Length: 405
Image (tube, rainbow, N blue to C red):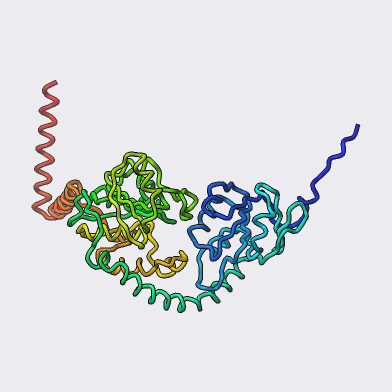
């Protein structure tokens, strides 16, 4: 009896294929992705943090209903996906979010999106060359964004003048920050690596450790307990989309591990985050501001009298800040100006801090000096005479010990 084996004709066709994972909310999608999946999302101007999450999840391709690079300013996410070899198809339209069922087998070829051989959408397939060309064109939009930043800076200063200039509304920390180093840890692309490089500094200098939302979990994962947790509404409710393949929400363990908690509320209507802390019976102070939680944590350290503020996982460069598509860049720039010379990136600390001098360091230097001195003395006639006398004396001592047997 001869069996006829049927093969799927789709498998022989060119292109990239995989099961589709569909979600309008990027944060929810990231939690469901598995290696080899095709992520179908609607995320205009893909930022680097989200792109890093997609790469870490091992996706085979990303289908974007919107444009990966709209041209407003150069985003870093598409370049990261291109470097990782992830196939990208963008500007396919929002219909794919409803026409493609979650888990359906998808094939991508030359910008076409096909399910079971039927085209359900078409867009622009981007490779390294196309991404580089779009990024170059987008750099012309930076000047417009900087003009907008100037306007927003004036507006932020008017709204938050008391907070920014006089520290009004900043809760008094129970942890003594005066004259101490403070390490502020945010969830970012390189937070793990930066914390590893700061291990000696943290061990020897005993700085105050501040976890910003899920940055408190990063501290716990590195073996440190946060002294202060500054957490916003999104991190408490899990509604944020930040993260590099990890949750954007702060865990219960991290909240309980913090010696004190400061809750940041950007509007009077926000109550969900406070309700979670109340359910967990965690006492907390409240800080109300339209600024960003990460930036306000720096301000808490500065107002508390910190001598040095070290940032981990923060986005420090202009390109990084523009990449985040945020409207609150004015708050970031003004608060960083307020903190001023106290503010140091973790990478700079790891390069400049050589470690504390220990007793064994001094002992090693002293021993080395004595050895050099002994060698110099032995090179002189008097030293050679002393060495001969010492050799004879040692021989006599050995003979005496042998005579005791």
